[in-house]
Length: 74
Image (cartoon, rainbow, N blue to C red; front, side, top):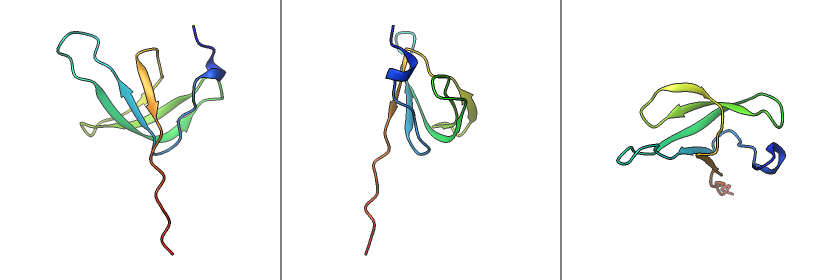
């Protein structure tokens, strides 16, 4: 089992991806809106791709994909 400090901490704008639990069940994708909790016990306020918001506690079937950094215009 991975220790909490080994897992990457999500940031606002990053994507949360949760794989389906059953055959045919689609993955869920959401955007992190707010960081909650202390380091090692992180959880997030997430807006899911269906428009609903919830508080999300990461688990072994979820990954965090870092948001692409936008290039600043001069």
